[in-house]
Length: 343
Image (cartoon, rainbow, N blue to C red):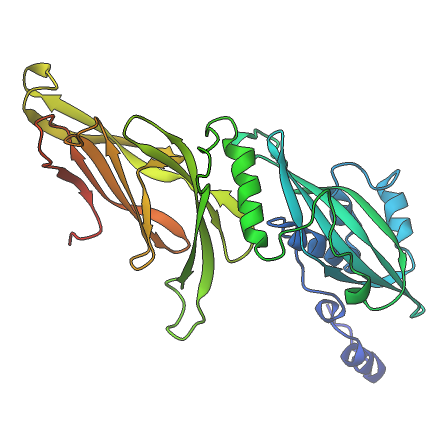
């Protein structure tokens, strides 16, 4: 079978034609924050991937996909600017309001500018089933405008002004309200609800001169017992978005002499692991980037369990766990797990 012969004209045409990847924006599909979802939406529009853009909405933005696509028939490119997001917790969800300005350029080079607000919703990921419902657009309200995008971009959207000084803290508070509203009681009067820490770090695969990434850790009050204070933690990743921290926790079995907890401890062993959403009497040490807990089993503190979690690779890992199961008036814990100081 003879191979087709390319003519000189065909070769020149192939060399002059831009590659498909060069004609389009790089593919972006990121629902981790309101800003990245809106960038993904208009990335899909610019790449003519209208089914993907259509699917970012919780309710159809047009009568049909064909009608939605037809609305962009003469659109060559859309440029996007976003402002400071506002957020609030509501009925197991976080509602985001995002100021937006866009410049749409048609196939003839004519430009139109629009500005307004997008409303987005994220249902609590920890209580969802399948099919999973990720962050999505609930509605958009844009009006024609004139000027540069930064000039027409609304200062704020939603019922209240955004926390422009610390947007991540506002998102962490909204996440805490959505996830822990049923389990964490309101704090006492004049009690500081949240502590905030910045965690600089690098991933193990990066070189020594790689600029540090920054995560944010927020500690929230989650109740007080007779002699213990409980905390919940929200972590904001460098990539954007916030999520509750789940802590690996050993499940232990304690054997007492004669089966009586007042007797001598004969054996302590790990029989499994659980994931806990709160820590007891916990503290974060910025110097060592470790979280510690100290759970008193009774008020005098002679029986207790204590854990250490170190921040690495962008998450907290359990590295040490001590248990003192003897109710003898003294503190003599046994280390039952040690990846922190051991060989």
